[in-house]
Every structure is written in C-alpha cells, then in structure tokens.
Length: 49
Image (cartoon, rainbow, N blue to C red; front, side, top):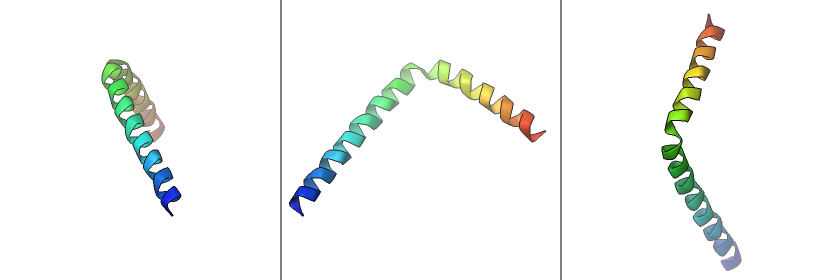
C-alpha cells in the first residue's frame, strides 16, 4: 500500500506541475488563443444556422 501511495503522490505532483506550466503557457499565448477561439465560435454559429 505504501508503494501505491508514493506512486499516487508522484502522479499528483506531476499533474500540478503540468497544470501550472499550462496556465503560464496560456497567459503567454492568450492573444493567439483568443483569435483561434473566435474562429471556432464563428464556425459553431455557422453550423447552428
């Protein structure tokens, strides 16, 4: 059981590190992401019509 707990802890820390790095990347690339989001939204609107 201790090995399982250690493995789960490692996975949890890895996920938190990945999440933090992803948020940093999003902050850096926000203008580009917003532009692509707008394109996706306009495509969705066209599909609805």
